[in-house]
Image (cartoon, rainbow, N blue to C red; front, side, top):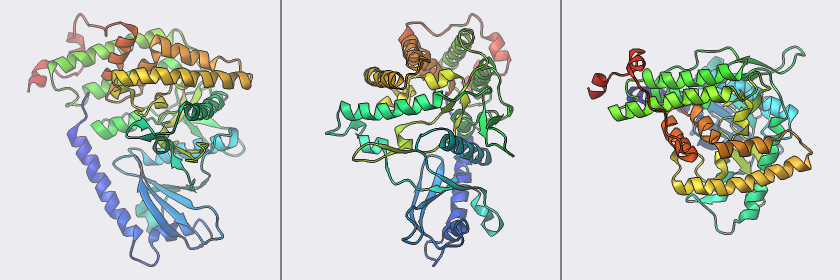
Length: 427
């Protein structure tokens, strides 16, 4: 499925305008920039200095240092308008999730100092998070070079990483929730609760790339069936409401067959899972690029970027992790990469089983993950979370289970519901 050029261009303009505004606050050549003064306000006015500036996929970051007696640098992070569609919600969900992780687990994460929306003369800065800076190297950069394992790094190192990741997955699996959605922090001595629908990577990227607002259902979901149906509906909207979603009759037919197959599989899966939970905390964007390690020992120092984390059907957390190979995007895998993934999955599942045994866990987490790997559910669940590359993932599902995508007998009803007509496609 294709993106929408006008939506991309519009968001690029929003991004560029915000970057120009941010530059006015940054003030490289002034004695003390507004950014530095803004952060000092959260540390009793103590002066600080920007020592590094960098950007990730969704955030513009400043690393700031106080006087030498302050042994931890701070990180000021802004969601980038034009890249982030729902900045306020993103910040709220991420902060709540990080506080939950810090309170309820031993998973290493940065400590949050402050968050909110800049006000007064700093208002143009927008939404922000200030957290402690974790001095580590991105795991993908420590491990890979030119999409290959660096020389001198062998399977024992990978197994050590897998062991740590297995511990993280098992910790996340320990916590149950009765609804699907975004975490909210306790208020007035209350408990952690779900207050809204999930904010997902699919929703953000779907709107960024097509201009279609997928954030129109804001209440939590109470059943797996309702949530999976909503993901199917999102895919349908991305296909039918974007005038540039397909460019030929063949693409149109393929996308429709893909959609019909997803609908059929969703009905089958709903009948075989716990419809009303318990649901599990799941991170959409967990990948080695969002994990910081000691580059000498490969000990994990922090998991970062929790903005697209939410409670989800447990099958999401149970899915085999695509970060097992250098390319963490399954829709883009070659046949060689699929083979490499299968090899590394066997190593990871062994580490997962070993940790289950060591911790005396009888919930069968590793068995459920192995089952998803064997029955092709991995590809279906990846497709459900992907905004535009659903077809590529379902074609991999088709090859894995040796079953073709569904071929409809009649597309008239589908066209009548607002999808591009063949005439429109030709034009």
